[in-house]
Image (cartoon, rainbow, N blue to C red; front, side, top):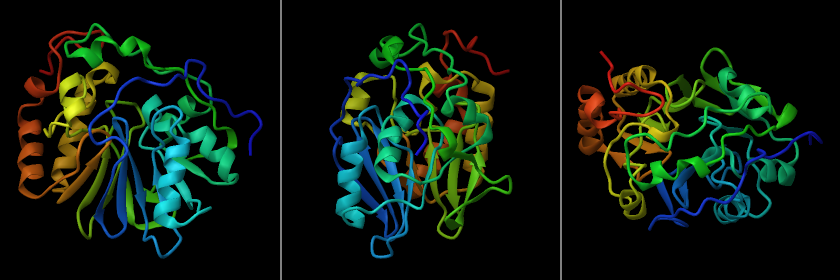
Length: 286
């Protein structure tokens, strides 16, 4: 355990929720996700094997809830082989420090471009409350953007796109929402953990988030700073032809609904995803 680990300086509980908060969904025998208020935390591994990987760590103060899910699925006192982070935004690392303190020596893997945001060196750009969007965009100035520091626990993902502890999976660099954002893909059954490269709810809309209205959409507008890269990342994931996708926000999707939704997003990315105005875009991709 690294004595220099610390939460972000602006960490705080976030007063947002959804009708699926506190519920989980097994999408295959070894892939399960749990909704912490408005964000999904995923677990890869068969419960009976005792070997599993945690993907992302929820909102601030999420650790007790995540530990309860782990105890129920994998057994009391179980800990992962590793933690893999799709990126380091506050709603994906909120419980991480407390979890590491609970478990001790568990490696945390992230893309090398995310490491400065996970070792206390660099803050993310501030969320943009001026961006076109709904209520959750307008109040985004309250969202933390300072870095956490997980010290020596964090390591760069292998450069050959493998994921330690997950032989059948590979990571894919999908920047745009964050410089080192990654998605996870298993080719044998075309299962995708997309993180926030695309999501299945309109995340800036309070009503859509509350009711978890299903829609393939671009990454959260108030925290996305490179829309050209975000579009390229969506194209890259669509080209994989996933059969099932778990995203960072929203309900999992599969089959024809996912295929058509992704294709529509690729073809109409500027109209669907890119805001007409905001700090990080001029509203034009061409």
